[in-house]
Length: 405
Image 1 (cartoon, rainbow, N blue to C red):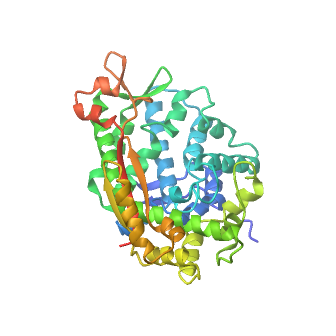
Image 2 (image 1 turned 45 degrees about the horizontal axis):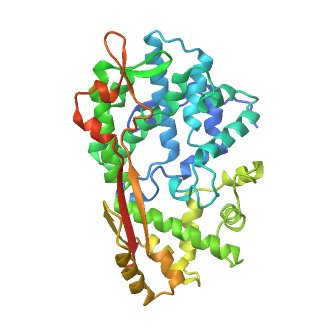
Image 3 (image 1 turned 90 degrees about the vertical axis):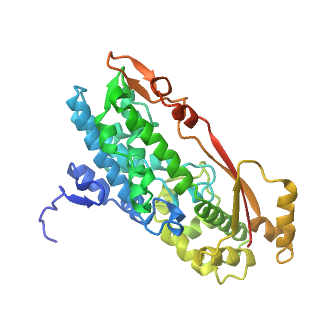
């Protein structure tokens, strides 16, 4: 083996931001780690590519974009006289890179189907702690900031708040890859307007219209992209496929799938027994395992499993209807009876189902603070002359029903 040193100061080319520098060799080593490389095999938007064919970008891509925006945020805040040490800056880069590392295959669809009651945030923390052991404690500060335990509150707000770096990247990135122009925000301008006052992350008054634009874009992206009815039905069908697979696995029915996927199908995993070994197996599970299993299950003898799998693979999905109010029970029963002509009642429960989705563009519990010219802080709703911001604080609920065509 040659002892030539690897050049760790790499540059990546991003279609949105152009060239991105990896700031130092520690961050390079974290990016190179198999835990992080797995994110190349987890799409950012699950089944949205069934609606928007360009939406094939990955969690890896998004995490690198977040790191780039965080580097910018640190430069801007330092320029405004906020002291951020090199250790703190590095910890911020690592925290933002790793905040989504716990996402499972197909992100949200599988969040509670594969592992009972363990959120992706908890799994992210497990990954960070494991990496911290491997890197001799060099991630301790990043973990403190991620958990909100570091005394400088604004640092956690950069990682997780209503106007955090994560949202600034994914709205712009998802808008770019779906081609939905309404979601496009100027993250540059929002970053340039950031400041810190009383240890809180705030936006200077002249940035108020950029914040309004950001919230409206987010709302449009939710209804047009993230909660688009086709993505919604596909994602729910994926959940149903997994529920069925788990049910069959409990009865020891043979299901062809990868070793990592098999582990989660045939074992009951919850927060109590999610140990280092589970984490290692989880780190080998990605979209490819799930998709190749579903391709196999098309030929499975179980009718429900094969019907749902075939529908997903051929994109011949269940019919979905959305409305503002709950569907009448009689309407639901009627759809069930129609399905019962072809399927048993138990099978029908997997094919006819209802649910609801909620979106709240702006949550007043954790307000975005606006810093006026006199140095006073105001909640965005009070500072804005736009009535639509008030409207964005109301949660919007839509009910849906899915059934065979």
